[in-house]
Length: 308
Image (cartoon, rainbow, N blue to C red; front, side, top):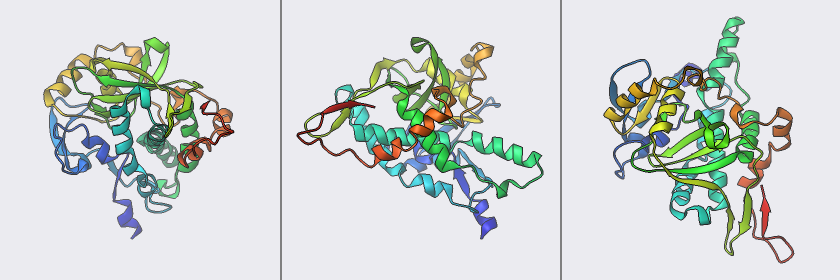
């Protein structure tokens, strides 16, 4: 049984997330939708279902200590409606519950990504041990990454006249001139994504009369071309999108990025671009779980707004 479990597919990026970048918007399951795939070192694209890309087999520790797919998968279903709400309700009514679910989801994208596993696997193999005898501390990693994600500077972005693409990491490291800092871009849909920058950055939370809402910066609409160029460079192996011509033309223009910026997407395992020392993150490592538990309505003696 152990050998069979090791051979199961493990998606670093959830297949349903990839499915949002399909040209199809049918009622079919997201993971069954076709997406166009561009392998970084190849000059041609191919089409595949979302569930058949973005995975690895034989990831060390998988199926021996714990089924980590199952650990992260439990809450994934709750993120789809949260993103729909954020896109639909807009900046005047970003619901706290939707925002915190998205913060949890972004945390898991970084924590479960391929970078930490491959880095540790290489170190373990060099020591002569078996990678199947080691497993990363996903729980602690996620709690501390979650602290950085919550404290980060946030900015929601809508695409103007084109589609965002997504890489097999799901997270794009880039430089944001307006902030004068490095940042992460996470494309969530073909026309919607979020930018995260270094924290701590306070966010105002207020009681709207029926629910808690949070004030998040929003850049409005932005052309996707530059962000897509960064995303192609941020891919480990593959980039996914709704159109073959778009991916191929993106590959051609992306090589014009300055050489010193092409290597930003090398270390994602600790959300390094969001700042914060290990000590700072440890102080807040339970904050994400506390917020996920839900914030009750204020009573007559409590304030109706506070900051995170």
